[in-house]
Image (cartoon, rainbow, N blue to C red):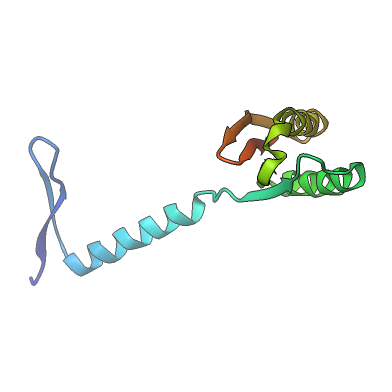
Length: 129
């Protein structure tokens, strides 16, 4: 009959086998995996960079971009980058990020509070569904 004995689930007791065309089985398996991959959601992370002495106008401009990113459904990574001796203004950076978190509260939820990683203070905001 030119059919193959295909083992469907080897971990079952006793193992499950079917008599079918092996090539057809592989094709259907790839098709299923492709559908599952297409249905999975991809997380997009957008970044906003601040300095510890960011001006009010620049802050508002970047906040608008942050709102736009969250409305589109992307995660927001806001960070303050400390150059050279500006590392002494850690408090300013933290205040800036907490202020941003408070103002973006209606658009997204803070995933992680500001934390230092090297010369960056990073905060993540996830969009509300």
